[in-house]
Image 1 (cartoon, helix red, strand yellow):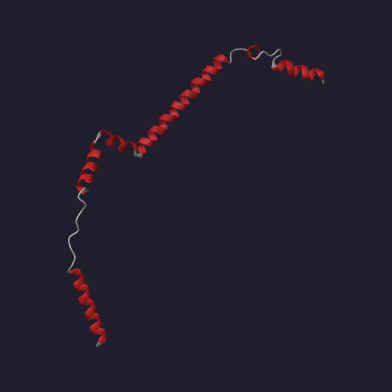
Image 2 (cartoon, rainbow, N blue to C red):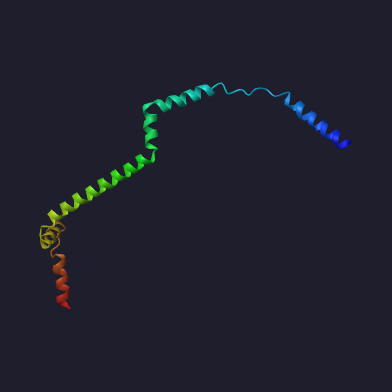
Length: 116
């Protein structure tokens, strides 16, 4: 009998604890925060930032960067080919004159070979 009395007492205490429950109230600034978040989504920057977060935009940006890199690499190699038309000895001579060297690199190399 004591078990059933214990169970009934527990049930009664549980039901009594529910009597004091009140409706939950939100913070007074909750509506203002929700309204500001909704407005931010509708603004130009909000829409722009939501587009930036999409994977398709990231893929398109990466593709554009790769294309620009390829273009820059090809245009620089084209410039190198036109300057490569100058004779290598001319380039060596210009470098020697610029750095006030008397011999070019190939002449000093040949001189060391001749000495051996």
